[in-house]
Length: 303
Image 1: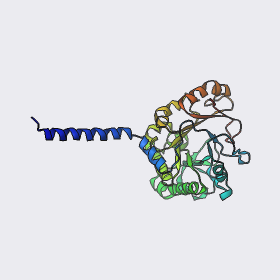
Image 2 (image 1 turned 180 degrees about the vertical axis):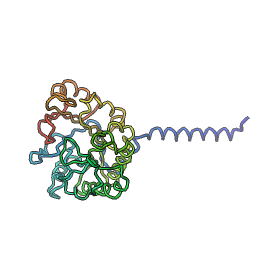
Image 3 (image 1 turned 30 degrees about the horizontal axis):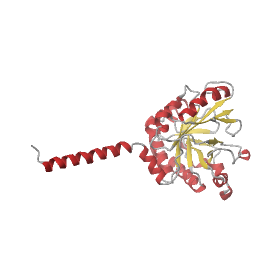
């Protein structure tokens, strides 16, 4: 027979263990979100309205009925206190600042800072002249050249007053025709995690752009997601339901239509079918006529 003292101690130990396990279960991937909120990092929730415009800022309507504006980092930061970012902030908007983290764009002010071996030979993007994929598989170049440039861009985002950043082209490992198969799955995963940590260390929220295949592994690192054409491509949007949406993180989507090619949906399809899905699951979706990101001819889903 076990003495009463030891039985009581054993019961108490079980109670402590059960409580600790319950706490662990309730602190899953949402714990990181809580940490971000406590540190002042913006955490957009599902259904947050947004406007995406990466060019033609003479026509930007800062009074548009959208909680968040996703704009180009470099152009948005121009002008200091009179910048587009400042104007949006003064108007009560959240500002997401776009930059490419996976390519060198030859029109950017820091383009010449990339070393010759920072880009993949013959790694040009087919639809974007002057844009070449970065070689994040080359560890020395990554650490000595690419990462410092990205850190400087994040520093700019922080000093300019961005609430969040949207690093683009962070799925080079699946674009094998252009990246020549040089970038591996793990290269991309490690780089994307580094980007998230670098943004958070500066008090910036960060969105995962596309990269659907790594959602499960990156949902705890990123604060929201941005996707283009997930509905048009067999409704890949469902992949966000058990990842970002389940963790109460916003998913921003834009669909397109130009000539009915693969990856496009018509306005009728968007309004009649896609929107009912988007509203049901909490995805913030836009539809754009044409592929120019000028903010024109854009529709959003409404209740």
